[in-house]
Image (cartoon, rainbow over all chains, first blue to last red; front, side, top):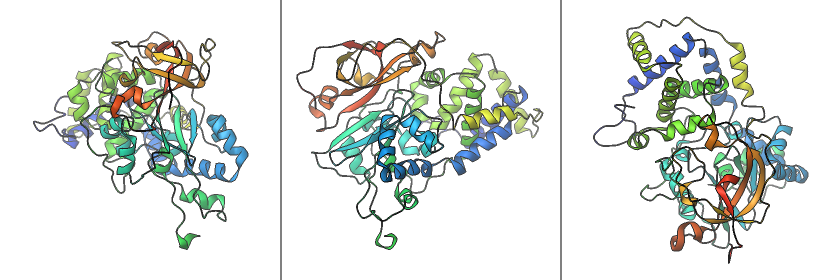
Length: 207
Length: 230
């Protein structure tokens, strides 16, 4: 991409107007060739901005917390188990956190991520910093996210190198015995399903 | 290929910076690039492996200087030109026309395309395809090949020539190394392979931090059991 960097070598060199114009021109050409419709692009952008996000994955996690048989199916065949809840679009491997094992997901080669379940990845997940460091110094990276685990806990890193996507099944926090499945789902964060956060216990007010 | 994209284990990158509240797209054009890419995929203008390899083929300095969706735009233009769908001249001309305030493209409606794009967010993928039976079983010791292929591969550089253990047999999947180069899907066994952190990073490895990588059988050789695993 000519003009994509200046003499300082920082990110985002190209003025946005040129980029934006280039994208509009590409769309215009593909529409003219009847390969794309702008409406289809509008709708898929809207779907990811409004409908497809971490709340989908959170429903899967909450179901696994309340239903041991579902949890087992989810760990055995994640793809089939999420279909039971109406989700798909991804070949899924679910990895479970336990007192002795904490799972962390990365894609060092690009930025593979279970879009259909937790939306599009945040910029940090796609960053060179995360991609380069998560496999080599996961404990330091987790510390930067505010997660410090004892050395007795195995940090299991999953480098998503194939057409299988990884979702972390976090540990259910204490103090949630009386919560409904929907209330549990509200506790589950995107970061916990990537493995860079734990699910915190509910605040006293919510309990 | 020994590309700049193959970043696992590289030194020199700093803290992972996070945004407090992050929009799905940071600019409207990012959403358009995303949607156009999904449309190209549903229209079979390029496959996922060609798509990844096109990004890997960016000049390293451009790769590092570009944002994620800038790389996607570069990829789309690169592949659509290579496949003869558009030309650079056409694109430049169209940019000039749009800058002048006119868009010569007549509106086009395609409900089938839209439906295909939405279906792809809900339905099973087709990356899992029948192939020969797996050669390895869970618990087998393997050694990754130490090739430096010029083309696309999903064996990260940091895990070349390393001993590992089969942690799971995933089944048969389309092989990216051939599918990226018009050499067919050549589906065969994919495994989750577990690597001891010490084997990957030597003395600087963090304690108790094994890495699992999904690897195709053609990346792997049988190996004698390792002295220890952790």
